[in-house]
Length: 163
Image (cartoon, rainbow, N blue to C red; front, top):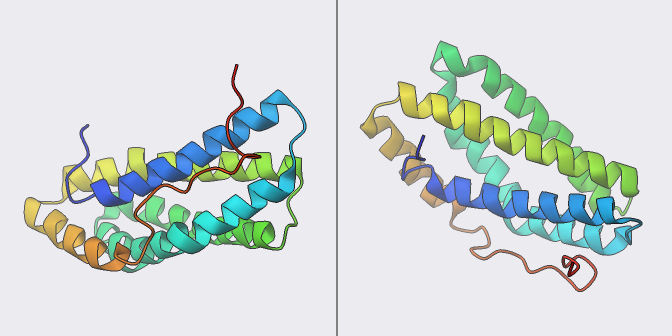
């Protein structure tokens, strides 16, 4: 299903985070990585985009979705996942993630994003009318205005290796 225009800004941020997950997973699959630059990038993306993203979802998106009984369970799961992910982001900021934990982080973040896109957003688009989606879109535009509007560029240490 095509993404409703009112959810595109948050989906675009999902793409940025998924790109990080894919790069990190590929680097880990290629062998030993230097965890410091990866944790620095994870911390930066959290500070500049994801913290604001999570707050917008929790303030505007989740309450609107939870009004529909069909979406309540997935909203509860996503809120719990935010808590787990915040802990992982804090551990990255403290430089407390080893390679195994970084792999788990990438998997957890990617799974969370896919759940939002495939279950929450799809459900919202089926259940909500155009006016409800427009109201969410307006609220998200306001909430996300302070988030970084560009994708964070990888450092030399986190840039994908040529094949």
